[in-house]
Image 1 (cartoon, rainbow over the protein chains, first blue to last red):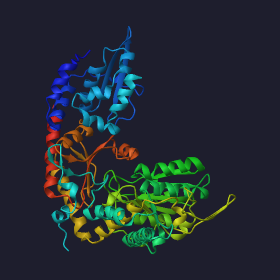
Image 2 (image 1 turned 90 degrees about the horizontal axis):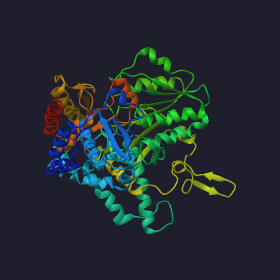
Image 3 (image 1 turned 60 degrees about the vertical axis):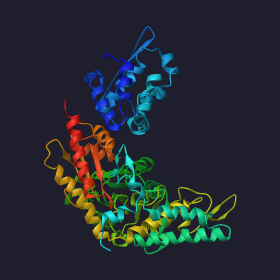
Image 4 (image 1 turned 180 degrees about the horizontal axis):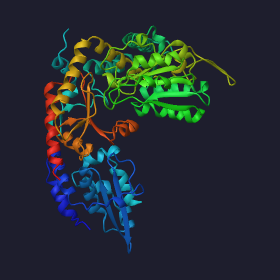
Length: 130
Length: 405
């Protein structure tokens, strides 16, 4: 499983003072995301409503959720890494109690959230809490 | 007056903005254009001097509003060379215009009839016809056009005695190619089909003459031609508009109502239920006047020159595939195999450059091109050569940054 240190990721993104810096940081972070195999990228695992293809797989063990995710777009893979760092290791109830949009905004990603009509980030968050 | 992009540019206040700490470079004009000060002033003037409901109670403001509203119809009619203002129906945009025709002609379709579109359509000129076919049992047929807008002579067989409706775009929104509209309309008329032309991508660039086109319906949106959002036009020949069943009924579109029956009003009101988008109508007419006052030939030559510049700068770059034609277009739609268009778009945006990445509401065309999305730079009259150059430079930077693994 990818090592997802939420605080470290947050610090890196918060240090970005321009959209260009955020872009480059997300591209750099995207390389840490563990990719899914082609057999895991099924239609069933696909999140609907994303302009780039996004796949999300959920595992539950002893009440703890672990997610794997992938995309064909790098920027989205960077965002997914952030989302997984937030979501992994929590129970469903904890996830449902979390305000994931607010949490994500602390990563300096508000513009990626506002454009979610096309990129589908809100849909991913909804699926994580479902 | 000779065309000068910089003079014109100064009339668009929003173009002075910065975006993400860079000067805004707005190249998403096929999605929507920016608005000149005269259009913004017209909207404000309406509310500060004339706001009232139209066609209703005779009072000072209502008379003013109604006069401006109907004068706007004259101005838009003149802009597209419609023979009479009554042939111009206000809608909220191209999509609504097409839906009004697709629902309004439902009565004339039966199983075995055919609705013909082309392979270069926006979903707005595809889905309403497909759904109409589902409702009536008619067949939706797709005339194959190449991505260069060409058709084979043998395709004339697509126009046959079953063809009831032919609907086609004048210019592809996704790749900017012109369709052979005149030949296709002639073929459609030869089989007595209703004809509809989607002019959404054409009106901002080319003078429109609906009488020369001789189509039954011509549809377009205000916001893609320097006018406000939420307003558009359904132009129709009288015989074509007369046979449309009104999709919406209610106030304004009636002449007499009892609990048992309704007598519909005459055109254009019969197809305009409810209080209209009055300031949108006035703003759209102002945009028409704005365009008509320009050196149209100089303007289109300039816009095409910008697209051609980008084409020539990028055509030899081995990483880039260009889907738009080399010339006679204001759009450069491209892809970089191995790099997602959303990523390219993300970097361009970080540098203040607005383009469109996506399928451009044309999934079947994307399939025809063998891609899931493209990056589209679309030019308008106020764009400059330095903006075109900056787009190319930043795109190449993006490819360098994103193509490293």
